[in-house]
Image (cartoon, rainbow, N blue to C red):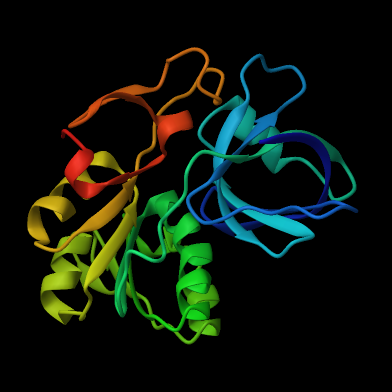
Length: 245
């Protein structure tokens, strides 16, 4: 974990109330899929924890949604402004756990860490299938980004306005992608249903409100099969069998 100042290189709206922010630095920055950053905002007491969507060594990308005053303030920020950020927090996904074919499932903002994960898996020669779930077509994120990687993502929407009508589990049943391991991030009910549906092993990235974001306050504790864990420090990624839903 490092505390550093980053400049905003771009901050653009991707979909309804959802934004992509690219942050740069003159010195290297290294983060892996599943890790997150904790952003300090002027005038707000708590930092904002946000998953890393991409990282190329000099810049990193986050995707966030306006859900309150803090993220609304972020959406108004312009290129050239700076932010104080804690980087490379938490334990990310284990890309070696997949033998040959991986299924990546993201729901809502949970699609963001799936993008960097897909890049890492492809770099290791793994086959990657992606399923993304949203409420409606106006909320769909990163479809073109996955296509640029050579992956045609399967989309599910609750209202049927794009792709399969229903849940990500419905899209998986309909299209039957082949995989030997899965990775997922998104709403807890979605991940619970996915873990109950899929027989193979996998990993889940848990989302939770955080206080300090680095393990001191125990505000994001969760019960697992091996005892109480802190999502920020011990996670946010856990093995499927560890999570007590």
